[in-house]
Length: 253
Ligand code: PGA
Image (cartoon, rainbow, N blue to C red; front, side, top):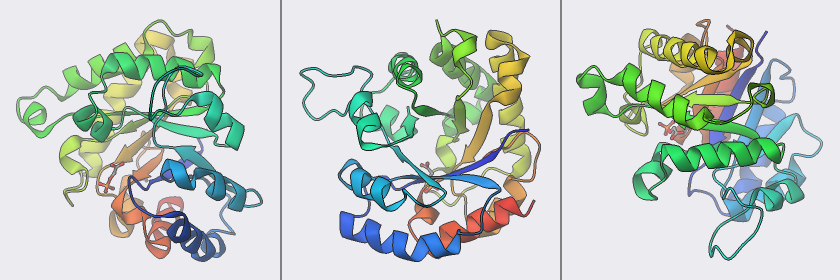
């Protein structure tokens, strides 16, 4: 049985004061939740305070990115060692905005995934096709390649914590959500590829989230299909009531 995971990706939004205001409103709204694992991924400067504030709540905190090395002369980067030291438990890897604007590739995703597993961070690896790839019928090829390279050289026995987020690039921030059928189809492709690389036990245990314009009014439908194990939410996670409503709708499946 895979536990539903609903994660908030705040991207480059919210100062520490704005994060604190969100939490004050949000925690009471999800205090009775036991069904879903809730993860907040704020910007780096807000991470320590959000971790601290969430200590007695059933809410986990993750980073939106990290370097794969523990330390070094890499100006502007954050290491997995730093993330675990401040109490972050999850990390987004290879979000499409990182791939698009910061030249991340499947190869750097692979390095980061290996590093996250070594440092006991729960990796949320983002994959997804562009609109032109979907229109040319290349979705399966794109997803298979992204998953294959991400998992290259990793011992299946270490993949227990793996989470994948299927985020079709054409659905991110556009208001254009994948239909539940499109999402379910993509999730099946991803799960089958994980099975062929790491075996069916790993594939069946891997949570595959959907991301891309998830809102309160579509969260219930998207999360009620068998291969969709939760959501990665951008814009609609910035407001506490909206994000709590997404969690409520997703967990009422
Ligand atoms: P969105 O973003 O919900 O605003 O489409 C999702 C994401 O980028 O993770």
